[in-house]
Image (cartoon, rainbow, N blue to C red):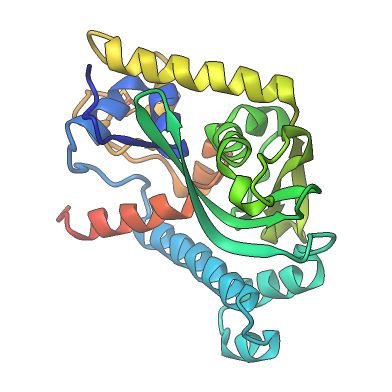
Length: 275
Ligand code: SF4
């Protein structure tokens, strides 16, 4: 058994594993500090992270009842002004009224737990169950790539498995679940991923297989796809290059922003490291 008993999986740790087993080992099993910057222009990178974090915070404040005009009056960054105006225009279009911003659900996964932190859950008892995720990146990924991302897999699976308290005590039927990525920098365009029972069963098998693999494998090899190393903080440890990838291509190369919780973690860790 490679994992400690109290290990809690998340979409980002599972994505790390799928992208590169060695990265998972370094980050979660060995808790290796980060020896290299993720991109070439760290100031710009941190600015982008902070913008995303602030946008999430603004939306959360709005969803818990602070009037939009009060929030809007405080914004000075032009990107944030535009994103927030877009959110007010269409971010909640057709979203059920029972809204739970920044909700966390944890469900069993094998002998471990799987945690999901949702930007917004909107569940109508016995009706639609929407998962909304706010994105502030410049690049919209292709839908077929996003469908395979662990965030899409994990979020829908966790809601179907552990959402009964939101649904009058009954499990949320997979057919009622839809995951929606909403893109602030694209005038609120969305990518939508409905769910069904067959998808739920396939996801359960896939997630359990990943956990079993992680727990039983004798070693954690480096990814064979060296493009992943350009933006990986462990590249100098693995002789996979010294130069950081360009921030101008980062969003596109990652095809996604990282989860906002990763952003906070990354900045905290980076701040402690002297380059
Ligand atoms: S540098 Fe490459 S091989 Fe090493 S952990 Fe990162 S992605 Fe994996």
